[in-house]
Image (cartoon, rainbow, N blue to C red; front, side, top):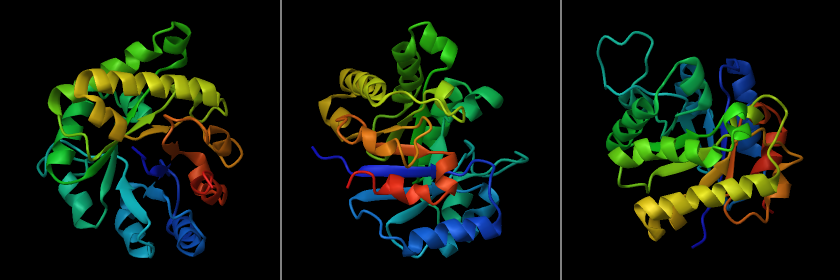
Length: 248
């Protein structure tokens, strides 16, 4: 089964109206590989603005976080309903920065995923290990633990894209080799097959989320289980287009 190539751009806590306008206008006018699905995640304050700026149906807009309730006394949070109301169609959940800096547990991430899916959003589910965990040889164990929490609550995975983030390679300039990424992605897919069946495992896209850039993206081209990228800093730069077109 052919899985459509997917490139997500996570702006994190970066950008202004002018810089986001520049990024989106570049995507609107650039020639993008028609076989690539593109999703961009600006800060929540610019979600509405970004949705209005996007003029190409190939690019969708994603929130970087969402809560497990639709409304209420949850100061500073953003709801799935609000995300949908402004026209965004995706949400990124489980990012390593949410898990580490904001102490979101595997179980809490799973609750968020369940609520977002039930409320009609597509989900990019991020998983991955720290440098310490990698050195300890427990990469697969960590990934499986994080996935297991979601599998416990969610049986329909048709609207989930997994992003494997080797945490040690985010924002450090370090990167797993294409061979390293392929091996880990293959193991993730094998775990999905074990827990959810072959059909789900083969249909679910698994992105590499460790400091992908315009130069290294093409080196992943022949890796069967790498179905795209979740891009951080490079999504703010012109090379984002090169990453989108890296399968050509």
